[in-house]
Length: 392
Image (tube, helix red, strand yellow):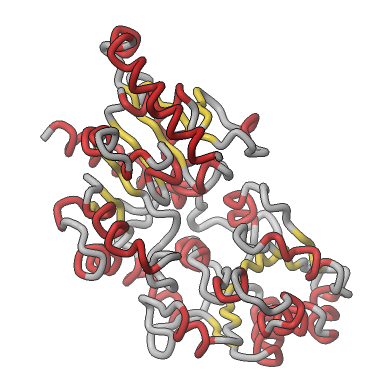
């Protein structure tokens, strides 16, 4: 029903299009969004706020889902995703910017509808990605759509990368145009403090999601994922160390797995384990945290950028390689501290805390490989790259 409603709104906007050209005359309209319009965070958020502040000549609009809980947090102009107004502005936009895909973040289904998809071809499309290309190989959620998604990605006029390592993947493995990929740095990393102590001694734990669990038949509390996380967070030795050193672990369940958060909350025994809401501003939690625990999340790259320690707790590494795989070689290219079971994870995290949050040498060396820039000038580079390509 929702798809039919959006298709109806597309057609209604098309019928209005020739009669409302005057409203948009001489306007430089850019649309931007991310995370399917649900969350206000990540690369899109920081580029949006940079443009709002520094380029008043651009009429920029954030595209938000009507049911999003963060609508009131978003400054500037907003469009409700899938509305007639959304499509009308999309048809008159010069630039669209997105972290996932134009259909998910900007104009639902438009690129796939014959005749109407001419507007997809007309706009200048900028793919920001939603994080560093690192521990998750790109694949469609449904294999039947692989060719369609590959074609869609090749249609993007511009994409950003943080390093030559990333650009090589986007060009040689994803099939993107070499000229379209700009090594600019990651927009959200402009918000990350450099050479500055964190505001707290807290540790941010962000495990990534597993599609074989989310869409599987097994009860969540019977999974290896649940049991290994619980063994770690409830470990008596770890919780004594957290208490003795006045450190909290802030646990953030990936937004695609957040439906299971209560199963973890209800089984936690330690007083130093704190839970973050789905709608929390993750950028604030990242910048205020002294260290990171993850498994295969790209958030580790943000902590490497800030030169703060990372613990990888990879209890299901062989299963992960089989189901997802990684662009970073999980056997030979890892950095920071790596643990494969609960006891290793506990000992290595305690060592990070008691060492005063020292960073490993392997992490410092890796930083030079995975980042071309480390200067908080990424949004400016992205903006100038867009304008330069538009002018061509």
